[in-house]
Length: 237
Image 1 (cartoon, rainbow, N blue to C red):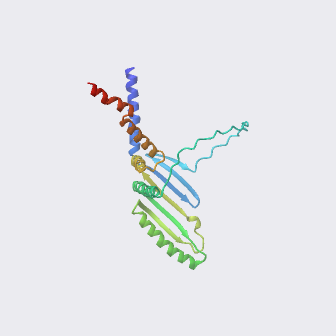
Image 2: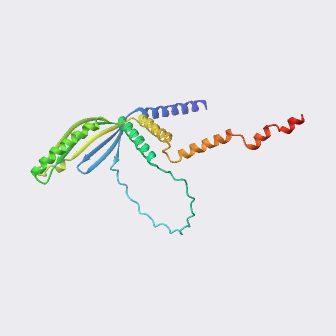
Image 3: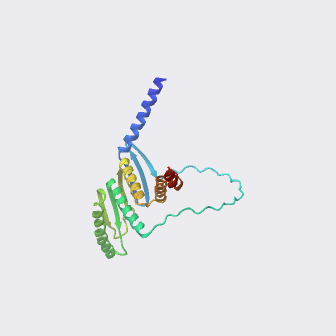
């Protein structure tokens, strides 16, 4: 029995160590777009599996379900609604922006490859659109690089005057993140929203706890009167 217990403890320790190792190893999501065909794959260590598109399973013939008699719905008691004032809305937007910034800072985007044909109504319109789009596109990339860790492999903007390159449209990138860091960010986000009272239900629970503490701290009227000696008893003595 002791040998079996030791083996089980070793297996449990290996399982916990593997879970901790997976928390600190980066997970990569590979996104690819070939014209209109989107593929999404996830890689952990040396394991890679496809998330989209999923393999279609053969559909089984469904038997017609027996008809059930309609049940009468019981009237529900109105619960407490979460009231959102303007000040709470502003605070919620600020917290959401901070959380979003932390999440973007934890992401790494690698091997970005973009091929994008650009065309207009005619050759002149295509040339004008190509110049405007290029200025907007590269300015947007410069802004994004201040918030996200981006590394580009190739960017190919093609002025498609004759409309012959529309099928060359493609996009590829790898998005990486460490699960432990994302978990810490999620806990910080929940604490931030709970502290500001922006999570429905948490504010009322805190108020109820505070009310019960106040009730326990205050002595009841009967107990206070019973604890104090009466004036008539002191006089008689």
